[in-house]
Length: 253
Image 1: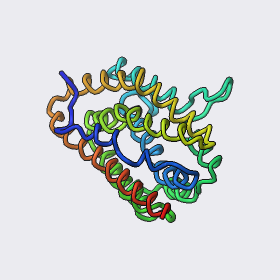
Image 2 (image 1 turned 30 degrees about the vertical axis):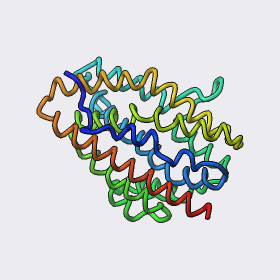
Image 3 (image 1 turned 135 degrees about the horizontal axis):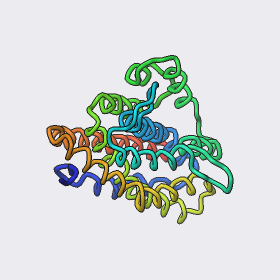
Image 4 (image 1 turned 180 degrees about the horizontal axis):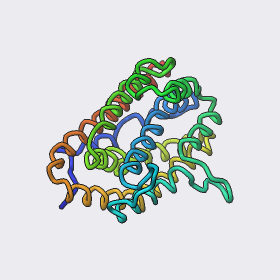
């Protein structure tokens, strides 16, 4: 069985979004990063939700019901949570992104406020609404993410594939081209983006496809829901990109 596809190619629309062509100076990149960091965090949260369901992370331990699916997810987690970003140096991609933000002088106040509220045990929707300093476009994106985390496993996996893994290389490639053409000094951000273009396009993306196909074959009753929620998640990303483009344009005026 094939994994679900949105009813129209919103991924292509996102890949051609004018936002990438707006990232021409340090200020526009800072604005981008202060919003996009929540999508970086969301990616890890969604991935770890799949791992929790598939990989036997509770105590006492019990064997995973589907070892092949568990292997798919654990291999993605290995790179995303403990990647070798330099010889002998291991970081999560989220921590790596925070380093890129610091290098550019972007504010970490909003993302730190979200993490602080979450660490006190608040649900994501409550934290997204109540944490200070979160930009409103990012807050709206997180509220959709909170809804996704309540979905069945196969639906969450479809969102991870369709609205995360499969689109990331297409979203990041034009940003890399624009930053490189502009000669902006942001080496950590460029390294982060280039790493995701490579690993998501060549390895993680195909693994996510295989995982979704496997999960929907086992739970075909979730196929229609998986398609609709994946589309909603893509629309949330488009809304974030639209709002970000507007914020960057305002800063340039």
